[in-house]
Length: 464
Ligand code: ZN
Image 1 (tube, rainbow, N blue to C red):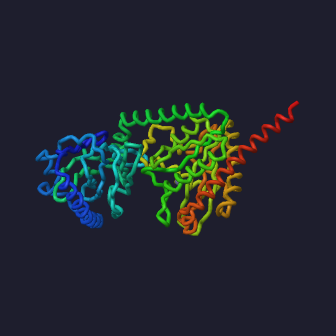
Image 2 (tube, helix red, strand yellow):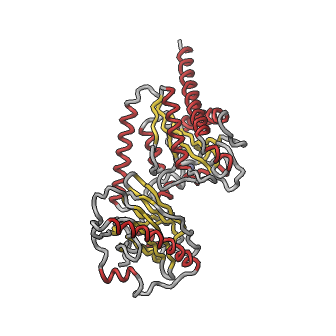
Image 3 (cartoon, protein in one colour):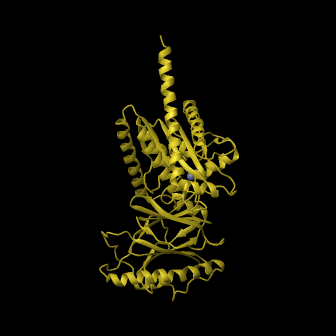
């Protein structure tokens, strides 16, 4: 049973025509029991408990009875709900137990650099209550979950050490629990882990097909744009990657999506622009894909929108970043490193890519793009200064942001402010502030292109 996990599928099954009332009761009880279970898990973190005895180990029991071997039900109108996740540390293993309202197929694989476990599944709803963070001796460093693509959710675990993942085992509802999927993480060597890691081939093919489709759509729409300026607005993060979160509970991914839509509206009301968003809902888009979208549209300008946080809660104000190899300063380099984590957070396999994070070689042709990016950044700072607080010291900075590396598309990354600053976070939660700043960004874009138009017409006026 303890096989290499790559590409295994756990399949649940139970007759699904079961009495709905009973199912609902079980869910309620499941939630209740879960609270107690989390408490138990917390205790377990504090003190490793010995491996379960075969007699009381539910998995061992199931393996004997062969209880969980049916197929998931098809065509359910509602999405399955993840009701809870328990992480339990035994002396020889870490156990992940996921409780779910309905049978669910789960795809489990590992990724190296950094070491992660990814559980890929069809789209689900997450109804997890807060759980205790894993202890220092757990194989699990941290975990997160959310939408990866429309129709496809993910649970991603960051590991403290290399593990082998057992084949997922499905447990039918019992003792007040809903359906459960159980996976054990057993210690292994880093070498073995690395060899076994990587996206399964069919998943990779699915991603390539999805990316190709979105690039084709982009090219088609760009051709239809005529002589309008093409602006690509990039709401950072999304789905499983929430970005930073504020003192008010506001999440970066939600704020920046709303802002991208407001900037789009402000530009559309001006006319003369074809505006595209890299995402217009709460899904994840890989960093490389954001760059490819900008290039597929042959964008005249790419604006990535983010919000920052800082351990020092007094730091405030908006700032604008452009691409550079070395970075204008230490803080900018650290920020780029943080924003470049996005693919790692979402469980993207970087092993075979020319990783955008590793190095960004800037050639001569890119210098012109970078100059145009810098000019726009200055305009953006000037316009945003009229609408909000600006980082007091050096609001235009540069660093090696992966999302800004298209060689032929002028690109900036705007940090709207600090969600870690009480004043910034409060105003970022208001419609008035959002409209004001979106208008300022649109004004900056307008000024940028009217300046270009002016310089072109002046150049043609001078010609004999
Ligand atoms: Zn961000």
